[in-house]
Length: 254
Length: 312
Image 1: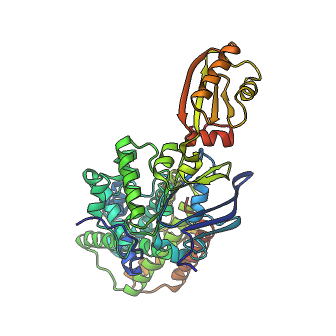
Image 2: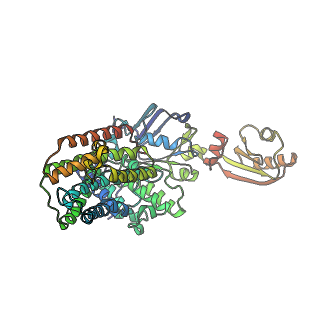
């Protein structure tokens, strides 16, 4: 067989392009050691640490510690992938001309975005599986608020991903790396992700309007009490809309 | 009609960055199934022109048509039909070479066989190497493979052989020629004279964003018949030397001063002209260090048009 260069141009069907892009991006994300640390290792450490810590301190909670902390750790995992990992990966894609080159390929912008969302969801499924297995081993007994939890993951991903893309679009790659990690650490400590907003006293009234607080509370309400909290979901939707508008206005390929 | 439109048609293109004019009233046509070189020094506006054809930039003034389509407005229709090699990058730093090429192939309807293409470009041995660990030349050959794997009608290649070793350069040239022979239009930018001269069917020379000459290599060098004489002397020329020499040689020849110790004579520079130059040196107490007779090449063309050397 030999190479036949005569022109035979054409785009692959969009669905195939999007699947290829999603497969490629998720593979690259999972291959990267730091990103894997962020995606799986840190949430698992936080979960085990919080549950063990609660036992040691002997703090009495309304529910078993693992039931209280697992929903928040799932929210943390969504935040790490949809915000931090996506922002860092996209920042370096801009730096290395990947986004620019893809702009000359048959893959349309909407296809690129769909591929990224697909990759995020794939990684999140993996994260949720690992964290759930660890939590179940620690005695987790979730209340089946599946609708609220699923909507929380989807809208939380939309909110954090649009904000992550905004960050990657306005900063240089190194600055994106630093800022995305810093924001992640700040929100993990003070953003009402793992601990409920009510645990922060008066400050909780502020952080519950952050995407981190809203997502954490949605997950807790769904998986502890089996409730769907529409107000918090609306907060996530509003952040997603804001992030999308900001990204659409500012994102450039170089 | 789009079917008979030229591969590329640029009319009165103007592009400015802040206060700098990158492209200034540029007009040119690229015929289909040719290798067309856009030649010029660094900063001449080559990449900006190419990126406007690729739809990355919107013309600030003038029009650009590629295969009869507007690269910005008709982007979705045009992109599957063109292949692009950027001046650098374009791949994830952690992606393996073949993984990247296969990914690009999956975006196209009827891609080339990726293994054969990689082997052809000498990428067979580094297929599993992450992009960031490929040599500069390997990264460029992968970039070329990414541009052609979708079987495009036109490929735009920006400085395809910059920094390549001679063997990789020959492989690249051979591939571009084969593409042209198979019916693909190749548009390349280069600041290498020999690349344009040996590879291109048509050359557009641009400088300061303006088109200063167009033609085949033979046309631009006037069929290679006009020879040149390059005179280098031991001490700087006395003032007024070019004019004096011009007068003693007569009209059909043209004398250009290159620097304080060298002159270029173009025209019917045959043996008798050579003798005249030699006699002029003797009469004017100028001691030649070297006196070389050569074919007029693109370097001389560029020099005469701009008064500057093209080589960086």
